Length: 526
Image: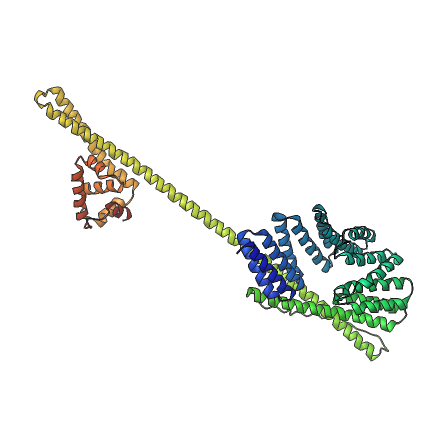
C-alpha cells in the first residue's frame, strides 16, 4: 500500500457516500484510516477521518459526526497545514449550525475565516464570510452581518459562491429594512437561478420578496411570493418557516381558520421531521451493527409519559374537538421522541466512559506487568554477575594455589640437587616449606567450602546423581564447572596435562557417561 492507494480508497468511499451506501463507505474509510495510522500517513488519515464524519453527518448522527470532525481537527493541527485545519473547522461549524448551536457555529466559522486570511485563500475566506453572515443574521446582529457580506461579495466575485453571496446579501438587506436595494438584487438574481441546483436560492429569494411585500402592506403579493417559495422549496426542514409565514399572513388578513390550519400544519411538519430523523437514526443503528458486528439492539424505552388535559369548553364543534385530540397526540409524540433521544445520548455517553475506564485499567495492568518483568530481569542479571564475580575469585584462588604447588615442586628439586651438602639450616628450610605445604592443604579444603557457598546445591546434586565420586573427583569437576582448561587443572593438581586428561576419562567412566560427552555442558545443566 502507498499513500496514493489510500487516496484512491478515499475517493471510492466518497462515491459510495454520495450514493448513500453508508455501510460500504464506512468500511472502506475505516480500513483506510487503519492503514494510514499504521504508516503515519497523516494526510490520508485526515481524509479518512474527515469523510467518516461526513458520512455520519449525512446520516443525521451529529454526535458521531462531531467526534470524527474533532479527531480530524487534531490531526490537522498536529501534522498538516492550515488548509486542512480550516476545512474541518468549517465542517464543525456547519454541524453546530444545523444543531441550532449558533454561538458555537460562529466561533468555528471565525477560526476558519481567520486561517483562510492567514494563508491568502480568498475564495475560502469569502465562503466563510458568507457563513458568518448567515450566523449573524440568525443572531440578529445585522450590522455585523452586513460587514461580512460586503467582504464576501468582493472575494467571491469570480467564484461559484457568488450567487450564494448575492442571495445572502439580499437577506441581510431585508433584515436591515433596505427593501428597495434588496428587491433590486432579487430582480438581478432570479433570471440566473435556473435549474434544480439553485432551487434553495430561488426559495430564499421568493421568501424574502414575500417579507418585503408584507412590510409594504401588499398582502396579495406577499401571498404570491410565498407560494412561489413553497413551490421551489426542496428542503423539508424549511417547510416549517414557510407555514409559519403563511399562518402569520393569514392572521394579518383576518382569515383565522387558515391561520390555525397552517399552525396545525407546522405541528405536522415537526412530527414528520422527527419521524424522518428517528427513522434515519434507526438506519444508522443498523449500519453501525453491520459495521462493527457487536452493537446490541437499541433498547426501547419502557417509560411512558402520562399527561392529561381537561378541556372544559362548551359548545365546541366535533371537528374542533378532533383537531385538539390530534394536536395532543402530536405533542405527546414529540415529547417522547425528545426523551428517547436524551436517553440514547446518555447511554452512549455512559458506554463511552466505561470503555475509557476499562482501557485505562488495562494500560495500568500492562505497565505493572512490564515493571515486574524488568525488575525480575535486573535481579536475574545481578545474580548472574555476582555468581560470575565469585567464580572468578575462586578461579584466581585456584590459580594461586597452583603457583604455590609449583613453588613446592621447585623446592623439592632444589633439595634433591643439594642433598650432599645438607646442613641444619637447610633442614630448617625444609621444615618451613612443609609448613607452607600444610597451609596450602588447608586452603584446598576451604576451596570446596567457598565453591559450595557460591554455587549452592551443585556439589550435593552431583553426589546424589553420582554417589561413587570421591572428594578429589568432585574437586576436579568443580574446576571443570568453573570452565578451567585441562592445562590449568593439571597445574593445580600438580600432574601432567596427559595425566589430567586420563583422570577426566576415568571420572566420566565412573559417572557412567559416554566418553565423547561434553563434560562442561553436562555438569552446568544438571
